[in-house]
Length: 396
Ligand SMILES: [Fe+2]
Ligand SMILES: [Fe+2]
Image (cartoon, protein in one colour):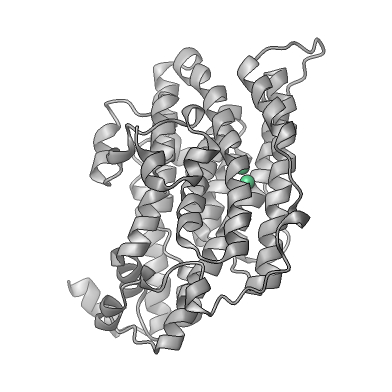
């Protein structure tokens, strides 16, 4: 209490810096597994403290994986071969989206998110007082911020898919992986085009997302790259895309997300197929536990700290504390639902690949996400399921 009182007496700029430091310290102190700490810790310092993702071009990330060649070209994984065949048939051209449509994001009926996405009464109580016009603009900025993070995640996916294609031991996986590289390039293309020509704005990468991408790109272990990108980042993105697809009334964005979701369904399916045997069959218990803890910590980096501070910095940094903004975002039902539904696709996949043992379940329970544990994993969910509404897709 005294700490809070002393903090309030400090200039806003100092308060903000202290809050950021406190957050990084809590990220590091929550990591119970020292091996997870050594894998995520350096990336957390680069992302949260040094803010490497926000320092302009380029960001150089070292990589340490080994490329795996096989000169005998075996047909070694039928499920991946089937995914490869489906991916070839499922290619589409970003130019064919209805780009000619006039998009007016400031028209509340066409917004990316509905206006009640944020709890304005709660905002007033916390000192966030906005006119009706400003509310529409803030909702639009929250949508633009989300799309910007999707785009940054897609760039991560593009580069990670290329690394994974090099490192994977299955020849069928390499052929399939090449289609994912093309898919991710197309996703970068369409999200970047939408942000440039329709939203006319791009937010910088969120520090937590940077931390995760940095960690999986620089880790030499192929299965951690798979876990980080194909299961965690892609799984969370799929949940977020699905929620936005269902909420938005903007027709171009809806069409764009529909096409992207169909590709992403294959990507996560591939991750589950590649990891299921490896984690349950080849890793020893200590290695499996490390992956289980790593996945939980990465999930928490997204759940507890994905608070759109980039929007806060632009709108409120001199008026309202970060803690109050966090409360506004954290307690607004629409936003809370969005941040929770992101996990609806991820948790069943972790179960499927053997990373949801009784040891870790109480932690998932504590953060309110065990309710997704019985959902269907990616190899049992079709793209149509994903598009037909969250309720059906989540049901077991
Ligand atoms: Fe993608
Ligand atoms: Fe993907």
